[in-house]
Length: 452
Ligand code: TYD
Ligand code: MG
Image 1 (tube, rainbow, N blue to C red):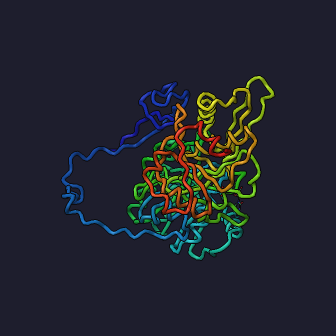
Image 2: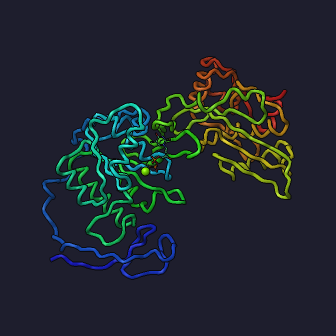
């Protein structure tokens, strides 16, 4: 006989407890426990082997050739590791308004697979309006449905078996088996698990869209990240045009690929040559601008760093950065002050990464430091020079990875000179690239190298 009992589940992290608690012992949030009823079937005791699934010798398991599904979108395919694996479940997270629904609808319309696009947020008319704005594919194979009940969606899927299911968004779905509201941890978990079962059963890939909380994690679901095969993050600044799709977890590919898109009046455009758009050669006579030869994920990307250094008006100088970690900026300023004797303590310093891009690659340090120096002395850096190098606390320029890729990209875009760590310089053959390689080993050498 089935038994029903109560558990209390933390709505923030998903921890459960048999009693109500004021504060979650796991994530330390207050007042997050909500009662939930669960029905358990009596255990069936030890069974013989489950449907004949005895353990197999690993060597005897025949490697299955996966035929990845082409989504009709090169950047998206690239992030997934060459297309979608049948039966896999993908979560796309991103801030509101970043373009998740647009991306999902474009994929639904561009792939040749029959796709079911389920929206819990928009009506079919609104989806049609959006589709009309998008250029290109007509979406003959795309069906849309406005639905939030998990059971209705599952019925529909079992009935028609689409080649791809898109759920916009997982937080709007609810399962009739649970009493809690849509978007709570238990609903999200239950709905994702239900969808996962049909995905594996029917060998149908599922793309879930997930909202992101203020803190930047995909709402509720640490739980979700474990369930799905791939977690993608769609990021960028809503005021800028560029969007980056990054893999945070990928069971079927590497997490080092990124996809770059540009938001236009008619949808997201794939950007296959991001460097050309991110650097501006017009600002050649302006001080405070430096080009970084970065690698985001596995992709070389030339990025323009801008810095402005001015005398502080108020007692405490301001240090602000957009797209670059402010604590790291403070550290670089301290290094410049102490190791290169640049007096910046009474200066306001602003750093901006052009294009609204966020960078994690530490190799951008050298460009940031150079842009700050350039703005301080008010002398422009030669616009055909670029930089790659991490700055250490004692003012040393530390080696960076993938140096050949950086050189290749800089060369491809017609840059003439690169400043790079002396350590990296020893390990490459610069004659392979049509670019002058200048080695730097300490921060204090930079002014002389740049301005003579
Ligand atoms: P949307 O995909 O609804 O974002 P999300 O689902 O992540 O919340 O789209 C967000 C923004 O994109 C919206 O403010 C309008 C803009 N947009 C364009 O600029 N061009 C377009 O063709 C479309 C469809 C949207
Ligand atoms: Mg949306």
